[in-house]
Every structure is written in C-alpha cells, then in structure tokens.
Length: 491
Image (tube, rainbow, N blue to C red; front, top):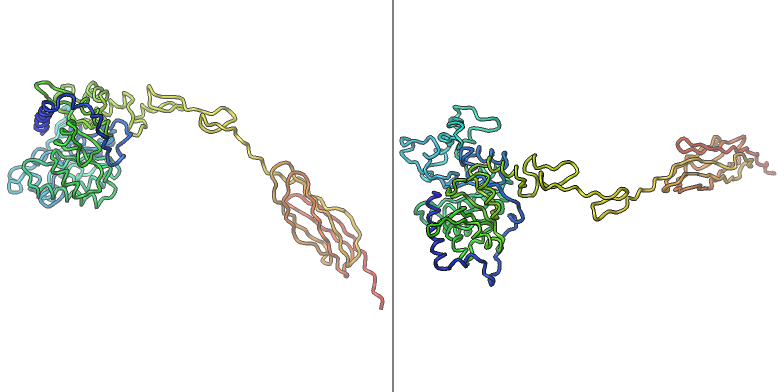
C-alpha cells in the first residue's frame, strides 16, 4: 500500500512542479492564512505517533499494541479502519484478514476481506497469529493468546490480541490523541463511502469529547467530504492525498485540516526529494501540523540519524513503526513530551532546577531572604502581628463596707500583653445570695489595661460578708464586701 500511495503522490507532485514550477513551494504573499478549526494541536512539542500501534514492536492494530506503545512513551496512536459486513468499524491496515490472522480459505465460505465478514466472525480470529518482532528476537511470541491457548501477559486479556473495534479503542483511551485513516481501497461506491462516514459519525456521537483529539484522514477526498457532511462539528482532519498535493500549488484544503501527513520522501524526475522542506513553509503559514510517515526509501529509516534529520527539518511528528526505538532516541536527546514535561526519568532535572535534562536545566528562581514570591515579583515577607495574651485581672477596691439596700461599683481591670486585640470573657460570682452581681462580662482588650465598671447590688436583707470573685482561665481576682445592716424603718 505504501508503494502505491508513494507512486501516486510522486506522479501528482511531478505534474504540479512541471505546471507550477519550483516557486510553488513558497507561500504566496497575497494569500491570507487559513487557520485550523481548533487550537487543540497547536503549541505542542514533537509527537511520537505509533503507526498501527508500532508494527515492528507489537502485533499491529491490536489493543495490545496500542496499550504497550502508550506505556512505553508514545504520545499518539495511529490506526486504520474498515466497516464490517454488519456495520462495525474495526481496525486493520490490510483489507485481507489473512494477512495478520489465522484465517484460512476453508473458513467462512472462503471470504477473507474484512468488509465481507461480520464482527462475530472476525472476533474468533487470532490477530497476533503471524506477527514476529522486526528485530527477529523471537517468532510468533503471542500466537494463541487470542484463542485462549496461551495465557496473556500480565495486565492484558485475550481480546487485546483480537481485532479491535473503534468503540473499544475510545473506551480504552478516552484522553489519548488518535490518528485514524478511513480506508478507501479499490473502487468503493459512493454508497460505501457514505456508509463508512455515517458509521464513524455515529460512533463519535456515542462517545462525546473526541471531535478534537481524533484526527480523521483518508487518501481519498471523497471519504473526507462525506465525513464532514456526516459530522460537521468534527474539527480535526488531515488533508487527503489529493488535497495535500494541490495544497503546495496554492489550493486550500477542505475540510480545513489540523495537519498534513506526507511521506518523508517523494521521487521527482528520477530524484528523491525530501517532503518536509517543501511543505514546511506552507504548514507554518497556516498553522497546520506536519506529521510524517516513512516511505521506506531511506535505508536508515527508524535510526537515530533518520529521526534527527526529520526533527531538524521541522516535522511535528513521526508516525513510527517502532515506538520503542523512537522513544529511546527522544529520551536520550532531551526532546520533551508534547506538553514540555520530561519524557522519561533521565530528562528530570536535579532538585532546585527546572527544564529538560541533561542540557536544558536552569536554576529555579528564588526570591532573596526576607522576601517571597517569584522573581522578579518579590515582596517583603510581612510577619502577622500575634494576638495579645491575657496577663492579669484585678478587682478594686479589694475591701469595702456597703450598707444593705445600696449599690457598690467595683473596677474590673483586665491587662494583656502586646499584640492584636483579643476577646476576654470574665466570669463573676458572689458568695452571698443577697449580694447580687452580673454573671459574666465580655471585653475586647488591646495592648495594656482595660477597665470595666461592675455594679454590685445589695438587697435590704443582706447581712454579713460577700466575696465577689472574677475569673478568666487561670487568672482570678476578688473583692471582699462587708455588709452594714440597713437602719430599721420607724413606725
């Protein structure tokens, strides 16, 4: 498929360069930018996209591949979609299910195309049956897990090795950026295209919140037009092959994309040309992302020099068959996650520093002693004034003689230390039931002494002595009153 796509792209690019000339690669000064319909993809660092989940490292287009790639450092997962005979969107790069599964010609009446099989039929197959790692380290290591003949690795289930539905992917990865190609293989009728678009629109409607973080792409413009019509609120598209080629000839792309996804090389007049330098001025002008996939032309594909060249040229993402290899390169070369955070433990700066290790760590700015904030906005530290503390209470006079039936005013003095004013409650008590005093008094007291008048009422029947006690916490004071009998009334 890559060779067919590359051949078509090469032919069209050659035609455009002949008709428009090399100057077509420069952004026209009289053309205003046509910005993407969402800023979700803007201002992100380099994105590690796992092509089919990383077919060099894991069985392609399986939940096992997608989960493993994300666990190992992928930022985004890529997948390919077909509609089954009974209307489900399933994920596979190849139309022929025999390519990756244990399907044989004597099964299902000889049907082998995914579009001719039902979901139930496809779910009986082992889609890790034929896969072996690209490095040759083992042979068919996951064969039999899908069918239950071999136990799954820890954290996984047999279904993770079967063909997944797009619904299953959205359920498993609710917040993960996704790139999905709606396959337009062969001579699909418009009815088939419309059916695919309607099915995808229905899935997105059933899983709200994915109209920005799921990029829909297709090599055929008809598929994207149908998709845009079926779900106009979807914001994230990649340019189709046809539209992307016309783009560098000055034609706007519809639906307006968030990204362009070319191969790294194309062939023109017998010469292989790198795609990123040609498209980069255009994508920068409009604010589109440039997500590159490998054409298989470069013998150094998916090696450190290959990655370094793409990043140097300005690619915003590489859709890699080996997320393990690319993750290691990005980690070792200080290339952070898309949000700017460390991609791996080796990129974490020492304590007291921020940035990306090893070469881009800087000291965290600190305000001078006695100040607070973040430089340059440092302000003096203001120590809050402490609350005052109660030091003493007194009642005066300490002794008094009062005639029964009369009143006596005592002076209650409350003393506190320095600090913010406090509320003090003083409890009052008389030892003589005929000598009355209020039960408590509340004072707000600042630094120093506060004096409050306390009235003592003696009834006419008062006799003897009365001790008036004032208390607050551990502090106490008293005033002793001697009662002088009232004169007898004359008859």
